[in-house]
Image (cartoon, rainbow over all chains, first blue to last red; front, side):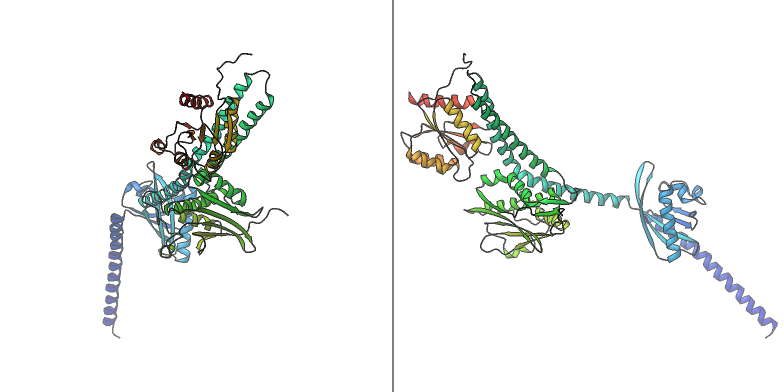
Length: 391
Length: 134
């Protein structure tokens, strides 16, 4: 090969190198520009972070999304800026991204200018030393999710209180009767005391009636207070079913009597399930209320509810059966879906059964509608047997 | 020992108390008996109507909501069955569940809302019975 040819080759190579550098240079700027474009369109922040947890570079669409200005951030340790807790989380994700090459995601919140902001950070490996952290301000999204969750809780709350509301009128009436007993006996007591010699036997009788009746009112109130509570966070503990079901039936007693509903209740002694007393009571209250409504709606002549508890090897079963018209086949599939109701507008929320179903599921149980042609609607609940604490 | 209030006397009257709450029924019976009346207490409307067909009562005080024969049906039965010797009828009830028009056409002499005043009840029953006697 001639010297001139070598010169030519070198010449071509150096031009090529120059072109590659130029392309690289232009690409870098295009990359930065596209960063900026992304930033402007989605309000993101981008940090380039090294394995030592320092800001290598910072791009922000809005300065107010940064704790310090870009100039003051570069070279600083992240944990010095956002605190050690979030700092160590960021460092961990940077390391993971760099070492594994897999994208990492971290959600966090930060108070900026007295405003709590929520961010979603995506970590991408750039090379063996640094990761690119793309951050989106998701405060709006988080706020929306929070609102939806709050709305859901409010609805559940309103269903819970509505089922209680259905029996509350009856309870007021039920308290008036024992109050009448107390008032009448106190007045009679006063009259008796005006006559000599004192009729001690009668005084004793009046006092006894006042005492027993006060206890009766206390029981009604405590039953109501139990169910008015939000029992979601209660611990799971063994619940005596005879006591639990009787409590619900006592609470409904007045409503059942006024609608002329007869109740039969069978429960083997000492049957227990592990659960939240208040939630389980609310599930039963719902089913009993539904049964009363269904029979009332259909103007059934002989209204009857059967509550049957069975203790089997496979677990505990509770049947709640009514003498109503039952559930038409075409509606069965929708029964436990939220917002499904057969009740008139304004009467049913359509959430009672779906809420009950999810609570029963929380207890490791199931709820279903089973065929019972001889009677009416038959809801069958199955629960695992509680592990007895007795040895 | 003097009596601070005039004694209310229901003597010579027979009264039927219809109330499903046992303790309230016992108390009401005791009150009426204290005032000298002949009193019987029953737990529901059907029992009350059976009793009324075999015995004479001057007044009936009945609850409305009762398991096994409610008070409204009892009053309708009384209205259909009795003429000159119809007992005076009072309602003693939680009342709030009952609209005024529900009992207006039933020809009742009064409604006692639970919890009621004992002396008020005796006075009003007595007044009604005496005004009818005149």
